Amino acid sequence: RGTLTVGELAKLLHKDASEVIKKLIVLGVMATINQEIDMDAILLLAGEYGVEVEVKIPVEEDTFETVEETDEEADLLPRPPVVTIMGHVDHGKTTLLDAIRKTNVTGGEAGGITQHIGAYQIEANHKKITFLDTPGHEAFTLMRARGAQVTDITIIVVAADDGVMPQTVEAVNHAKAAGVPIIVAVNKIDKPDADADKIKQALTEYELVPEEWGGDTIFVNVSAKQRIGLEELLDMILLVAEVNDFKANPDKRARGTVIEAELDKGKGPVARVLVQHGTLKIGDAFVAGNCFGRIRAMVNDKGRRLKEAGPSTPVEITGLTEVPLAGDPFMVFEDERKARAIADRRAIKHRQSELGANSRVTLDDLYKHI
Ligand code: GTP
Ligand code: MG
Image 1 (tube, helix red, strand yellow):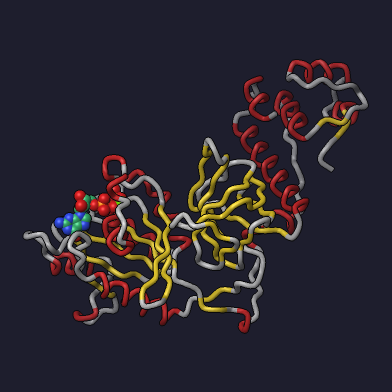
Image 2 (cartoon, rainbow, N blue to C red):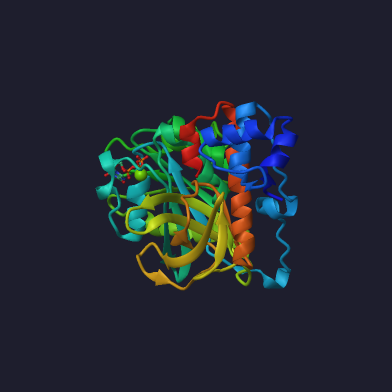
């Protein structure tokens, strides 16, 4: 039901109602015996008494990540491949993507190190490709793992003058764990000490054997800096996409994954999301992680406002009430009340597990929650 009166709660806790009221006052909640108190107060109080509270959330309303997709074959239409660029730090992932997009993201990065996942869409041979850039620095394993989970194809970038390094291997493992096809881009072949064959040799140890050596891994030699091999790389991406025939049903409520999110001073909570199924529209009510939202505005990676975003489109959305976490799934619901209710219950559940983790509840905690 979500609430209890103070009297009912006291009974459940085997405490005197007056004692419970006093405790509530200490926690900053003013309530009389017949007054209903909300779930937050209940959880706090239970935490004070060291009692576990189980909030029952109807399963069908809470597990949208696991809701099975039931699309008729006829409703599935081709969609752009989602391609994640991975590899060791400084091997040239962002430069390569800059070269493909003919822009300059690298120039704006602090210390030349990527710290988040960038999502872009380009067109090659009249076909769209969605790219996710990931950081190569060892600290960002989780982000790389997330990138691997939402991707259709992984491009492993290896600098020909450096070789196979720890995060190269990590990227290969992520892609393999996710069961995603791999294309190896041997980068920096313009450098005098570049040795593409050495890279190929080293990668055979990880079961990535080039086609010309009898294996089935596509290797492309590129120079992001001198724009060598870019077209071949794009051709290979489109080829792998064609073979895999990536499809989605655009004609239903959207769901996808939060790529990154932050609190913007002007716009409030902002999230960059990848739409994976259905079509996201202005005004849609949705849940992202524990957060509720209603799409107020959508902007693509070129800063253009969109009214709708179909499968494989990365968009920046505003209209969230809170900031979700990167990697959170999001899903649109038919009505706002349901979306709100689910987000609320998830938030409560989340808080509950947090409270459970550190059983002492302080006043500070309380104020955080109201
Ligand atoms: P992280 O995101 O921090 O993991 O790095 P990154 O893989 O995105 O590397 P980034 O694109 O920032 O490039 C690192 C350095 O390599 C920069 O100084 C680039 O100019 C240089 N670089 C990238 N591609 C090439 C290339 O093809 N040839 C040469 N010579 N230098 C390159
Ligand atoms: Mg980078």
